[in-house]
Length: 439
Image (cartoon, rainbow, N blue to C red):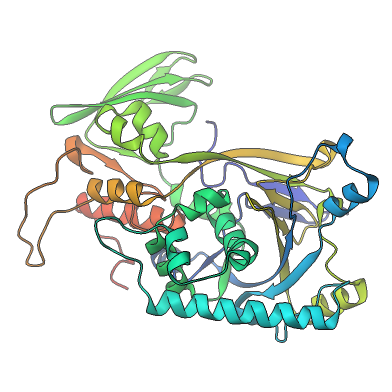
């Protein structure tokens, strides 16, 4: 690729009057200081300024599979285009009482409010008091929901949409996640405020990459340990460039030996270029995710009347997010302050003429089986007193001077915190002191 990955899909857009520019981080990089402990410490150490951010979320549900346009009546098409919003939720309940969606009667809204409050309260208590099973067969999220007796209606309408959005996967894939991941996430993010980097993700990328010798336009084809060094083979895919002072012509095959190699790529790419992990990484599921930046406002749900909306937005700085779901999946929509819209995993059609950027990226998913594989790869095999124990069979991180780093390279949700934690682990293996690790 021709850009660093962190901000590769970001977009800088001018306002309608041409006097302001907005950077849209794509995907959105919102974090909190509960789950993202080390990323928050890193930002503070680097002097990267972050601002608190409040959200208002709408929930809407399409109860049936979407038929073809030819098979729909005009009324059915209109209902699908604007499925009814059933609930509005403010992040960390900063807005109490919750707002009532437009077109929803008071008693209907009150019943939904009581229903959601009761079962969400029960779900939160369960996460704090009922651990996920840790026996020989750790339970999935679906098994955990069944064990704590959460009703299916509540799970599919209110729990799966935000978690499937967080993990950018469908509902079946989300239900296969280790319950341990979600329980720990709920515990660590409870009442934790959201933050966003003030000047966008490109500031983080520029700060972290400053002073590095970066070689873009290189497609790595294999990584092979050879004695005390590592052979890297790649194809040059862009214009002529230099490596260690040597000119490399475009569209040529190259190979070089390095003392150490860090692979910061998804597991399917690791398996394709690094033979010792080919079999095990095939057990780590991945999926391609579609996300769009666009201006098709017809895709936004009809939340409530404009006067109420104007009153709400004038009181406080909030951003709107929308979860539009079917039984199978959730479409997430973020209304950016620039008036552009970011839609991920789209369900309803978007006018192609209004699409500014369409991106596809790979997300690593989690299952109890894949969690066991990842934990084995990064197992230090040491007792509490520091004495080494018998190593588990198979390649482990650092063998042959090859190291893995990435959002999937830790025992937790596949998020940016995993990137930071695994990078800190690699630094420790190299004997490098991480300045914010002792904070």
